Length: 148
Image (tube, one colour):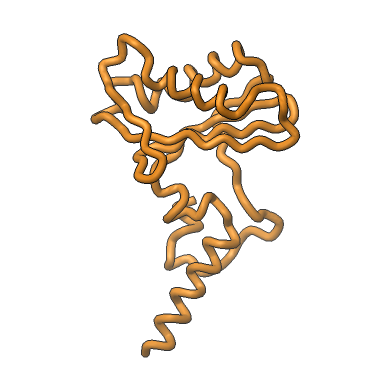
């Protein structure tokens, strides 16, 4: 994504890709599997003292497509509970607007995928929408040429 968002790189090298969906791991759509998945994905980003340097503000974003196995709020509540589990030396807080980390949960049919991305996911990387990244680079380039 850094390469795609680089303003120096004006050549679009993707022909059939519109948007990338980051998934670290996935599982079946059962609450027990979701808990195992969340511990696997969240652990390195929120509980590992060698990776975590401070208390983070985080948000959880759930996308459901053809999915009715687990309710959206049940997923969010479970993930928040696992981030702020008892015995953790960190005190992370939920902030839906100004977050440092965003936990993405993608639910499709009978599968759940999850990953943790940085706070610039929506601003700098445009939700990993490749077309929007290139359009914004061309707009900036046109604005520079108009001002000159």
